[in-house]
Length: 150
Image (cartoon, rainbow, N blue to C red; front, side, top):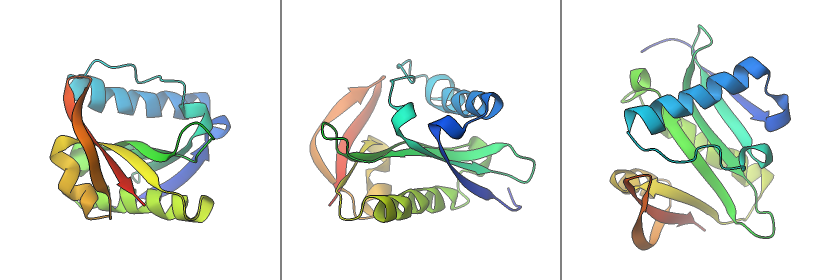
């Protein structure tokens, strides 16, 4: 895929009904349908998160992630990191993760950041300074590892 991409950060309350529906559908299409991982995507965390939506020139979502600062109970984290099928292999995943990390470093400087990485992406995230900690765990039928960038 080629063309201009638009990177947009939204807080939860800034979503329109249509943009919220598109984001949730995008996550569902990849995580639940494509990856055949029946898990509770609507986990109650979205309202507290900042959302990075990457749209193509036609306004269709190409990639997405959510980022949340520490709240006294949970650490800062980046999650729901997803690149649409048409954009995989283009380098967009790296741009997406770097955009998330840049935001976190500005909004929550010095905070360690946690991700739950699909096992096959551990080396990808290690390239951003994340280090795997603990044992692999099953999340919706897919092996994950907790990783930290401290």
